[in-house]
Length: 164
Image (cartoon, rainbow, N blue to C red; front, side):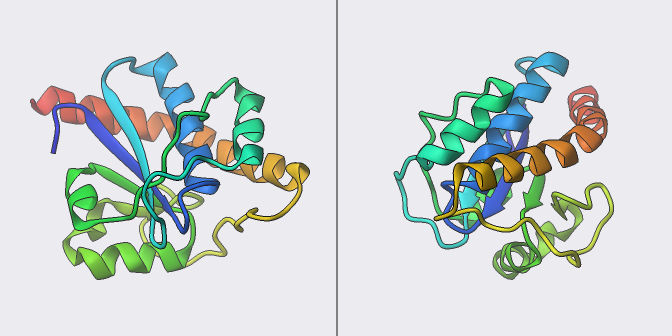
């Protein structure tokens, strides 16, 4: 694991939900702990090098997030090992993370339940192929969950840095 606190979001294709979540959390944390963290994302079914969808890029602009440079990457054991905190977008993603690295359970959560452990919830639906309005709703839902948990994430960043 790196000296910075690494947070990874995991969805399916890594071009919508996790890319938007990555941009949203980066925006929130830049205000709280600039330079102390790294936010990454990956997909359980992602191919490498695909950009965020046009609507994901547009929806992220709600918070002035620029995710236009995003490139997708598949979820790998190496990315799991690099991450201090892993936030899955659905129970299926949660299970797939633990299938790759069962020892990551203590640092893997569902976005909507963090910091409560466990993999049971409805998850956040994939907006792929839907309207810009649906992407905006998805982004705002992700943003609401992150807004509720940002102080816990900041606390974890501080704990890691204090232990270094």
